[in-house]
Length: 71
Image 1 (cartoon, rainbow, N blue to C red):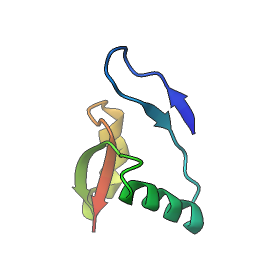
Image 2: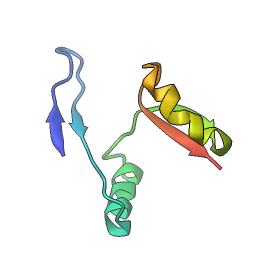
Image 3: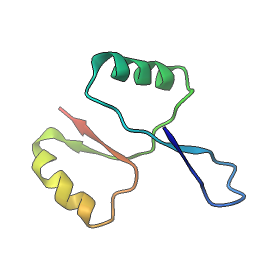
Image 4: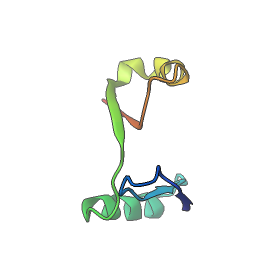
């Protein structure tokens, strides 16, 4: 994790996180989310059928936060 400096006077703390495709590591992240020790900025939800369009949509700059893919 790397600290990110949010805008002054926002009362927000932020960390940049990178997760490996490792079951134990991902499980630890899930535990942090479940314990409300970590929050995730979810920008939108998209159906699995639109998965191929997701990178193009993100490149437009309109996506803020993570995109959740719904099966």
